[in-house]
Image (cartoon, rainbow, N blue to C red; front, side):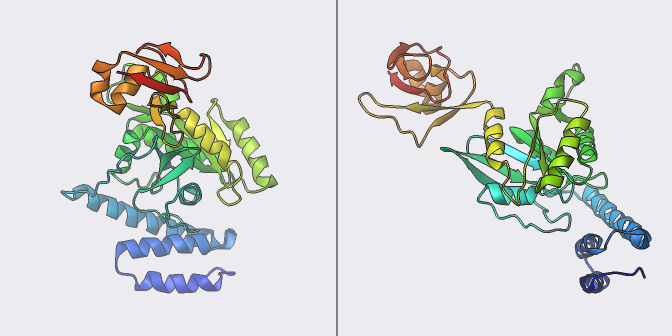
Length: 328
């Protein structure tokens, strides 16, 4: 037995030996791997645990594949946009969701804590954006329902650990997505002519940027990226750059906030209508009520680039922050 094993290891090992359900054995193995110190004396033990873990997960995956009814999840869309967090184990997806939203996913130092998708609402100024925490993606195993969650989302946050080979995290996760015919929107031109592919905006989040050493790792990571990936360094622990992350998410969702007002009254700035960039007055009218599209005569707008109360037609392209008075 290798030396320098901490006392808590033996308690987890006892749980592993007593465990009967595969899920319990997997959880115990993951804890043991997280606890064992990394040095030459533990290399063989760690390799043995990884083999056992891989075998148990493969058995579980095969069991799910032969099951007639796999568990599936569908997260109802809420707020101004739906964003799914993906990545390998232990990169801090759950910690980010817990910090940014009202959700309470389980957060732990050992991998595979998250087993089901967990949504939460992230406030940004006067709107809410939905974030979904998901189980880790690895070459050994991916939940069969996870690709469908990604396809339904508006955007993907690909989370990496800036201190633990983030380039490999990024490359392996992108490769796993490609196996499911999912690719970053910015690379869509590489797949011209291929059928059945889904493309989504992807923002790389380099998490655990907690100190100066981690910032140095982040700068190296940015330099090693072959493509101009959109990337932001954050820390779920210290809160570093989380406000910047919120702003980037809002901008990359390509949405605008538009406010309406009744004639002679002030607008309600706490309840904007959220529309895609490029939306027109007609789109706004339809979102309020389908009858408004037919009855709409004209509208007035208050905002940037126009004079207050300027008369506009139904094809006028709205901007973020516009106040619109519809006349039907």
